[in-house]
Length: 183
Image (cartoon, rainbow, N blue to C red; front, side, top):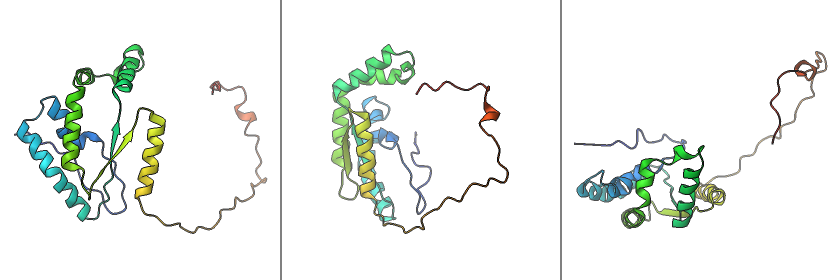
């Protein structure tokens, strides 16, 4: 029997842990690509919300984010990887195979949402065709979900630099091999 362990340990108080999508692979990739049985898939869908509730009831704050990419953008990214020798490594045989199964993945996503989008652990969908905007929206959303209060801190004042052992630190590197400043 094959058992996969997705979480090595739960975070301790005050820790922030970011899990990638592999926690939900049983609901998506493993299901669509036939790497798990229909019974294993169903069991995951039924147990996932219970595990999430257990973690939340134990004091964990769980923020689930789904990065949604459109068909056209996925195709553009894949073609860019095909045409760019520097990015070709980012296009695995699994990616190529998954491309033709777009609608299977969409159905699997919707089924996962049906089972695991709950009041205690809701999914938050971020449109991510524009990666930069998506990243900013994710950061903003995560920060909005974490309660915090302002901490009063004494203003830092830089001390004066000591002239006692003054040294010409620029002359010592003049003539050395410097990397050209292109940017």
